[in-house]
Length: 162
Image (tube, rainbow, N blue to C red; front, side, top):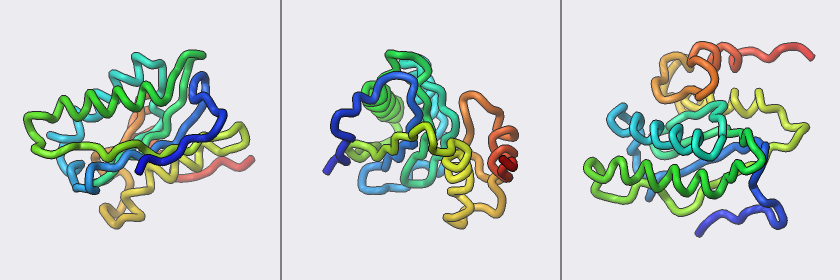
């Protein structure tokens, strides 16, 4: 079953989204650079095409978290996500014998009063919560299209006072 989308929301334009995309049957595909790198490259290529910034991402073994922001009036989340999933699955066709992605994806539309920092921190700290590493810097499958890994991890380890 595909997750429902917000009624009356058009998912285009300069908007921030927190996405979770699960692998088919929650298979643990994202455990090596051989798989993660081509998937990330296709997401980055498609984000550029649809004018999205990937503020933070984290490939967990059986799912992918993406904090994305449309940077243009025509940034189209459903088109971006569909094509990124299609391209990444195609890039792995010689390596995987099963489907890569579960149908659909889960999204949370961030509103103006949502704290992007807290969502990015959730993404970066996901491997810690799953007991995969002791420190976010030890996890190889996370990053950002606009920040270095060090900047992303550093910015998510503390919250500035308001």
